[in-house]
Length: 193
Image (cartoon, rainbow, N blue to C red; front, top):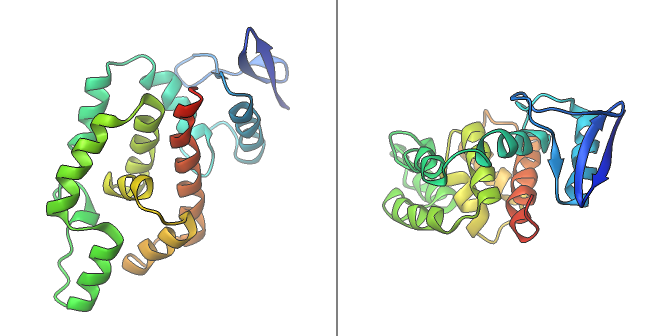
């Protein structure tokens, strides 16, 4: 049974009254009561594995283990190198059919525009946002997808449908959960973790 303990406005997450630890041995904690409650819900439903982005645990553990302990320049660089056609499948459409190409560009944008705009955007991100971009970028094998989700006025459901129309092997229902968790964690910089 998971719970939280409020210690000087920091919410420590517990498992059977014992402090819950990340894979790197750090205390799972948050400055946000709402995030703490959502983490507990996801821990109950999905467990403690940080590998499942259907759970906010997949976003929060890396924040604690890596983003709070590493230099921002190094973290940003590791994301920035992924924003290229060689590394990001959404930035390369080789379909000869103009209709498919237009749908692709509507969903993901054109590489020659997305890359410079995406790099400038990365410079503006706060730590929770950069963490959210990294997690979703790793899962989707695309830095461009979190860029589009963060900057385009489209619902998680609508965007997941657009992505699946371009890559039908993806599971739309699961991607919607990933996208919603991304947007939630991305929004936390208003109330830092």
